[in-house]
Length: 371
Ligand code: B12
Ligand code: SF4
Ligand code: SF4
Image: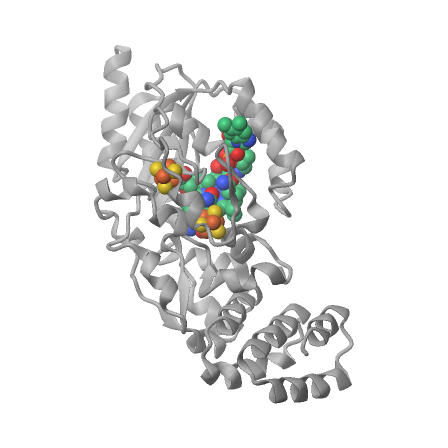
C-alpha cells in the first residue's frame, strides 16, 4: 500500500472511531524542548509531582517506552462544554468541578476507543502498536503540535483552530515511518487573556506554568494543606480549574462535543451536599468520574476551603462535624474555613475549646492564626 493511502486508511479509521482529529509525528524531540523541560524541573515548577522528574529520560526519548516506535499518532477528543463554564465562578455556595471531570472519566472512554483501533491495526494492517492517554511519560502537547493538532498556547495547553482549548490528547505508537503532518504555528499573537485571568498568577511568560500556584495542581495533585496565600483565590473550585481555557478567544470556533460520555453535565451541587458525604458516598457518587482518583480526604479538604470562601454562614454546622476528623489536614482546613464564616466572638470561643485537646502542630498553627 502506498504511504498516502496507508495514512488515509488509518486516519479514516480513527475518525470513524469517534475521535475528532488525528495527526502524525516522527519521534524526534528538539534540543530546545529538552532543555525547556529541564529548566521547568530545575525551577521546581512541578512542585510535588516528582514523577515528572522520574519520567524525564523517557519523555525525551520515546524509544525508552517502546524500542520499535517510529511514528507517533496523536489523536484529539473534543470536550467543548455546552456553555462557557466561567460563569460558575460566581456561584459561591456551589461546588465547582472542572469541565473535564463533569461526566465520565476520559481516560477510560478514550482508552476503550484506542483499544478498538489497536485491534483493527493488528487485524487489518498486521501492525503492532502501543496506546497511551495522559498518565504515560509522553510529551503529549509537544507531539500534538508537531502532528498539527494545534499549538501550545500561553496557558501551556494545546489550542486548536477548530476546537479551541477543549481537546483531550492521546497517542498511538507505530513501528513504521509515516510522514509527519506539517507542524502547527503559534496563533496566540499578542493575546494574553489566559495569563491575565489566572486567579493565582500561575502562568508565567514564555508558555511556562508554575504548577505550585495552579488551582488544578492544588486541588488535584497536591496532598498537603492548601497554602494560606492562595486559599481565597481558589473560590468555589473543588476539583481542577478551567479559567485559562474558558477565556481563550479560539473557543468561539469550537462546536459542542459529540462524545456524550464527555459532555459536561453542567450540574453544580451545593457545597453542603458534599460536606455531608462520607468516604462510601464519595466512592459511590464518583465511581466513574476522574474525581474518584483524588480520594475522599483530598476532595473534602477542597470542599472545606470552598466553604470558607462561600460567605454562607449556613455551612457552619456542616463544617463543625469535620473538626473531629482524624486527619489533621481536614481539621486544620476546617479551622480556617470556620474562621472565615464566624464572627470574632464565636471564633475565639471555638479557638479556646479546640486548644484544650488539639495536639497536632499543623492544626495548632491554624488555630493560633485566629485572632
Ligand atoms: C503534569 C500535568 C499537569 C500539571 C502541570 C501542567 C502543565 N502545563 O504541564 C497540572 C496539574 C498543573 C495540570 C493541569 C491541567 N491539565 Co494537565 N497534564 C499534565 C501531564 C500529565 C504532563 C504535562 C507535562 O509534561 N508537564 C511538564 C511541563 C515541562 O510540560 P510543558 O508545559 O509542556 O512544558 C513546556 C513549556 O513549559 C515550555 N517551556 C519551558 N520553558 C520555556 C522557555 C521558553 C523560552 C519557551 C518558549 C518555552 C518554555 O517547554 C516545555 C517543554 O515542552 C499532561 C499529560 C501528558 N502526558 O503530557 C496533562 C495535560 C497537559 N493536562 C491537560 C489538562 C486538560 C489539564 C487541565 C485543563 C485540567 C483542569 N481543568 O484542571 C489543567 C490546565 C492547567 C494548565 N494551564 O496547564 C491536558 C491538556 C490537553 C491540551 N489540549 O493540551 C493533558 C495533555 C492531558 C490529556 N491527555 O489531555 N496538568
Ligand atoms: S488552571 Fe486555573 S490556576 Fe491553573 S493556570 Fe489555568 S487559570 Fe491559572
Ligand atoms: S487565551 Fe490568548 S494567549 Fe491564551 S492560549 Fe488562548 S489565544 Fe493564546
